Length: 86
Image (cartoon, rainbow, N blue to C red; front, side, top):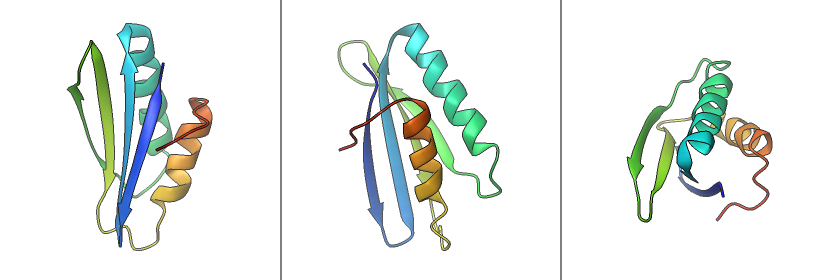
């Protein structure tokens, strides 16, 4: 099951997407890569292992004056069919 968590401060936006297994990994990584490549403002991304065989992909926008990250994150969530984000 893919799930997500969102955090923000003044011009900082972070989306963490947790997933499990190779199939979900390919889906999450390719979707995020495809969507962020369409935009000029590029985020920092990294992934790491969490508990019980799950991994997380983190997408962070720093100094996002125009708040472009919001629409990018919405597109990612919609494409991955994530209907609830903590």
